[in-house]
Each structure stands twice: as C-alpha cells, then as structure tokens.
Image (cartoon, rainbow, N blue to C red; front, side, top):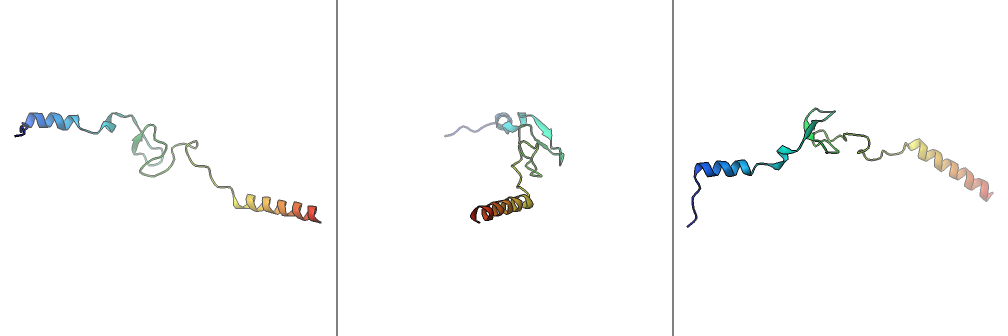
Length: 81
C-alpha cells in the first residue's frame, strides 16, 4: 500500500517543483514595460522586437521595386531595338 505524505512533506515538494523560470534574469520591455526574460528577442505581451538586430528585415518600398522594373524595361527596349 502506498505511503501517505504528511503536510510537511507536501509543502517541501510543492516548493521544490516550482517553475525554474523564476531564477532567470528579467528586464522591463521598452515598449509595454512588463517584465520579460533578459535574452528574449521579442516581448511575448506586446509582440514587438526588443532591438533592431532581432527584427525581421523590412520590405522594400514599392516605388523602389517599380523603379527597378522600369529601368530593366528601358534597357530591354534599348537592346532589342
């Protein structure tokens, strides 16, 4: 028959089984101010990237792509005649 745990043993086990994340260093998010893990690249609350290095590359402006296509078309027309 299994042994029944006393209240003292139960409290010790409850303290031992707490999240290990409590020991990791945290910092305040520069945007929303909530505490996040220090090495987190993105805030889990406001979902903004902490630094520009961590952010994904931004899309090129539409006018830049349109200008490049126009230049290619001009070169194509010049070469073909």
